[in-house]
Length: 97
Length: 473
Image 1 (spheres, rainbow over the protein chains, first blue to last red):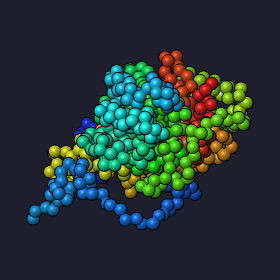
Image 2 (cartoon, chains in turn green, brown; image 1 turned 180 degrees about the horizontal axis):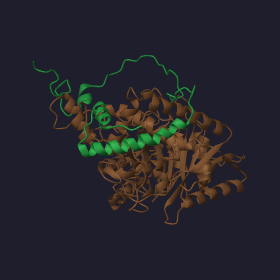
Image 3 (cartoon, rainbow over the protein chains, first blue to last red; image 1 turned 30 degrees about the vertical axis):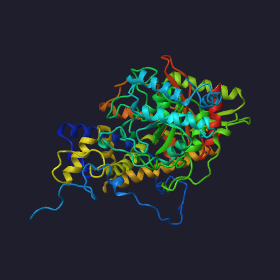
Image 4 (cartoon, rainbow over the protein chains, first blue to last red; image 1 turned 45 degrees about the vertical axis):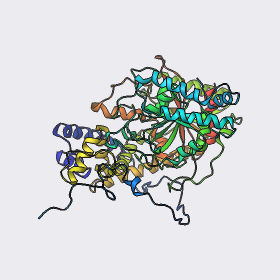
């Protein structure tokens, strides 16, 4: 299958990415190439095969709850690009009427 | 200076050397090999002062079991109060707030971390050309790539600037650079080592791995890395065998398989096939049974890998939004532009390509056709591989189809060709099996050739013993 510019723009929005026109063109070409290549999987008959979703050999590793110190604010906020004493700061979310 | 930890340990016991002198030697080597761009940060002062402390502990007879071992960590493994950024602009300024428990166990045994090493951005790549901090050069031939994504790790060991490096392997990122630089690269069974403190790329594939000069050191380090951990619910609860004590040369007859197509195809460099054949002849001369096996599915492993890993990556990398850590675009006017500008300015082109592909295969209209399909093929490949291994002790292939290639050979115009550098390493990753790359010779340009050996789940001990034997002859 071939994807078009519209699809690229939709996927870019879902990915929270922007592309300028030149990069969008490159991405389109490259994704189409890859998608064409992975079509080869259709040669494999997967009727009645269950998807493999977990690779760990462990099932339900449980333990008693233990009270521990939580991550302190200063550590959690240490790497924040903008913060105040208790919060991560972002641009205003609620629109003015 | 020292080619194994055992040599270092002996020299320390005989008081022929101090830990501080070992660190000073490595610091000089790091300086001499600066042009290779393997290091993102060198912890010179810290390493020297830690060396002093450990020397004192040695004198008092209180040093840990890895005293004198000097290592590097790939820029995806957390080390508390040290910077970490997955070779990406998007984690500019990030400082790890805790240490990965695997690394912590080594630190508790008095390992010294001498620096943080370069890699492909978010461990995505097979040539270490995708780093925001520039290409890493192969120490064997600086016009060539060191492989990837753990390219800085491989060069740091191969160029003798440290003894061991901790890397990560999702589809070959430890084994392939080890092959390109002539060292040992080991990826254990999926879930053998806790992934806590490892920056996630594709969580159902990712594992921490070891790059070392020999199998003995690899086995020793694995005793510390492996094992259960409260912070990773998927990590194996199985007890960790004393790998370094279990390296005796196998005396019974082994059954070893090689994939026929791989040793016949034109796509694998002639000298690599010849080197593998020489090993096969050697195994046979030692009385082992080496048989051809059919595994026509191996071609399908690579596209399956790309669908699944990009899907997982698009999910894992959604956390880089400029809110809680790392880079934030100054060009944002509201929350949506904050996300979009930050991510577009912070991620490099290959990471963006994989996020886009992953988002596409997970999007509602294409989910079944791509993502579910690939998960089904993964099961078929895994089951076939287990069937094959059921009848064998080990499976061998070359680690890579070619030896180290020239920097710049692959670019955006031929992305798919670069992906093919992983064709032989992705199958063990898809199946979660343990695999190792060991150096088995040189090609006509004196570039190292790697042999990949794959074993059954949790057969690390016998795999390492076999690898040691295979390297000796």
